[in-house]
Amino acid sequence: MNADISLLLGLVLVHLLGDFALQPSRWVEARYMHKVRSAQLYLHAALHGALALAVLSAATLTQATGASWNMVLSGAAAIAVSHAVIDLGKAYLSPMRLRWFMLDQLLHLLVLVGVWLVWLGHWQPLVAFWHWLFTPRVLGTAVAYVLVTRPLSIVIALVIQRWSAQIDNPGTLIAAGARIGMAERVLVLTLVLLDQLTAIGFLLAAKSVLRFGELRGAQDRKLTEYVLMGTLLSVSTAMVLGLLIRLAVQGG
Image (cartoon, rainbow, N blue to C red; front, side):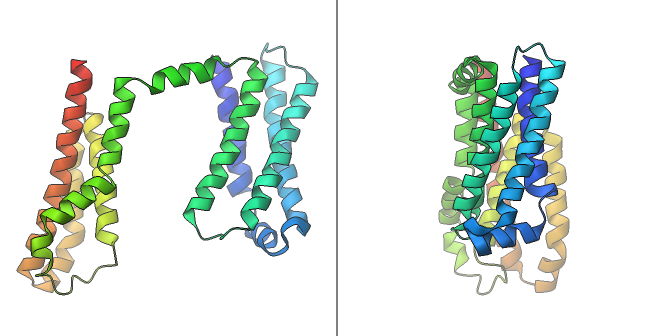
């Protein structure tokens, strides 16, 4: 089983190397400019095929998997061709949208998983993952992480809205506070679930140091109290939610 996971991780590793470390920016620019006529598109796909070929060949030589060299070549070719098709489709979309970047990487990952499953010749890893996914621990954790993002941002904004009008010019980026709060709660929830409550104190101390200069310079007691209230609400709700998840999982 460890060898099977190592093969998947190896394919993911060379994908990351090929897509980021070994892809010059001029290749990306050429793909968006020339699209299907871009030589760099096919060169990039061939690079991914070669990297996948190296991983699959190493797996064949070092593991008693019974895989043939036809499977090695077919797997590498499937990865190369699919990479070219996916990247070509992405070339017709906006390059500055996070959603298209995430979709692009997800499709590449699905192809790698598909090649891996065909290589193994059975669906047991997928079945095991499916059973693991639908457990109280995993589902409860997923619910907690969803709650600490947008839902709790709305709740906290509604709680402190009566004081928001009193802050005429907070001097921050639009919606930056909400996104900082989401990241903060995700980190706090993670630390609680890992039973690292002490680290939350360091997180609060670091945030206090970063904001001390700006709040002191503003000489605005209202802004100081507003920021403090938002921070305490954000951290405390994430901590309580994390503790509840831990109790529910341990109790189950």
